[in-house]
Length: 405
Image (tube, rainbow, N blue to C red; front, side, top):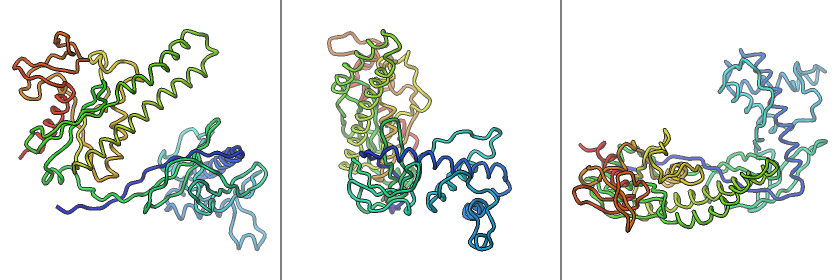
C-alpha cells in the first residue's frame, strides 16, 4: 500500500536575551487592549458572526479606523480606538483574528471577559531580518513604535520547513519566542492500513525503575522478536534526590520560603520533562532504525490507582510514563510513526505466555502477589523473566488481537 504524505505543526521555543524585554511586555499589554476592543464589538453586534472571517475582519476595520473615502470626506469611524496609539496594520489584524477566534470558539459569553493575557502573534509585517540567533521586531515602548533587534538562544530551525507566525510569551523575568513550524510527514496511513502490511510493532511499558521504558518488538503473529530497554531511571532518581530533600526541608519551614519551594518544584519538573523528551526521542530513533511504523502503549488517559500500584509512587514528581507517551505521540507522527493505546486492565498482573496471575519479586526476595515494585516475575506454570518486558508483551498481544483476521 502506497504511503501518503501530510503535514504537522510543531513549536520551537527560543529564549530572548536583551535589555529591552520590557518593551515586549508593553507590546503585549497593548495587544490585549486591542483584542478587548474588538471582542466588545463582537459581543455588542453578534449578527456580524454570520460573515466569513475575512468579511468580518474588514467590517471591524471599517468600524474602528474607517475607509479612505471616509477620511477624504472628513468622516470619523463609528467605534475608534480611544486613548490608543497608532496601531500598525498587521498588529491590528492579528488582534482582530484573535478576537474573532475567541468569540467563535466560546460563542457569546453571558459575562464578558474582563482581562486578556494573550501572547502577541507577529505577522510578517511585524518582524524582519530573521537570523540564526536574532530577529528584528516592531515593538511598542509605551510611547511609540520602534524596530528593535532581539537576540535569542535555542536549537536550529529545521531545513525545508515552513515557518509560521511566531508568538512572544512574556513571563515575570523571562521572555520566549515560540515559532510554529509546518513540517512534511511522509506517511499518514491509518493504523488499520498499516496492520495489513507491517511485519512488526513496538509495544511499550513504563516500569518506573532503572528501565524508564521497556520495549517488545513483536511480529504480527504475537511472537516476541527482540526486547529493548531504555535505561536512565537511576540517573534520573539521583538527580532529583537532592532537590526533593531540600524541598522537604522547606516544607517544614515557614511560609516565607514559598518562592524557594516553587523554584525547587520547577527544577524537578524540568528534570522530568528533560528525561521524558530524551526517552521518547530514543524510542522514535529506535523505531526508525528498525523500520517500525507502529508503537503501542498502555492507555493511561483515565488516571491510575496509585494505591494498588505502589511501585509507581504517589509522588507526582516520580513517575514520568504519561509524560513520555505525551511527547512520544507527536515526535513519532513527525517521523511517519503512529502511536496507539490499549486498555490497562490485567496488562501488568498476568503472564504474557499463559495468562495466569503472576507474582513479582526482586533478586534475593520472595515472590509475592502484592510486590508491585518487583522487576522480575514468576507465574504458577513456571514462566519467569523481566516484569516490564512481560507487561510490554501483554500490551502488544492485546493490540494484535484487535487486528487478527
